[in-house]
Length: 367
Image (cartoon, rainbow, N blue to C red):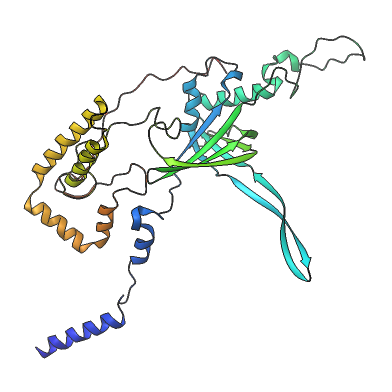
């Protein structure tokens, strides 16, 4: 008995003197990145969207439709964010070094595209080149030989290079890069962007990776924006080829047989009462149908609750305090991501079927 009492006292003393024991835990990272709805969680690089605003009045091809123009942003593989540079000079101020600004410049950025099989990105460059460079429309005969004529002789020759007639507007009105996190976006709008170089990539029999196209651009200014992510906000987002079928782990897609957490019973009840209180449940036929589906799925999930499942959830919360933050902060750091949990058969994500729309017209004839 004395031995047990001695061990108890020793444990209390060790806990007071070394509260973290021999190994520090996760509290610092948890408080920094998880608290307050993942407010300070780092942004993921892969959550981005690029919107190209093209001056449609100067497009020389009717084949390049609005759909093709909107597809450009979906074919981005990677992109730089805006870059800036201050040019400085160091002056002596009574033998004290003083740094002052001399100039401010916007540095160019690079974007990489997938070289798609339909030729959308290739057509983008062909149209852009044709806007500024006359060579794009010259026949092969224009480059067969050089015709020399005496001064003052009338000669109907070809125009070359930047000697382009009829161009009154720029090709790009703007390019906006959106980074997303926690269902919100930050936008960087590049004002009056111009392509400075274009590389079509390469080809080789020994290569086994996909080809890519690289575009370098410069711009005159940057306008910042922010807001909530919804359908068509940012403009064009989630309009083409977007999976609108609800996940089976959300209330609209079926939900899970848990009391707490994403897609659980309490989450379903909150969604239903929120739609009713906010007026969206009766604002339209679609809103009413969505609320009704959530109500039916929540009722089914209530029937799945059992004493053993509730005990398992309680034990999980007590054994993992980090799970409490995950339930309180149901908004994840990555937009639209729902991670499955092992909850008696509902832990597996089911694949949803999708309808395949006919592809847009191929651009091969245009090129």
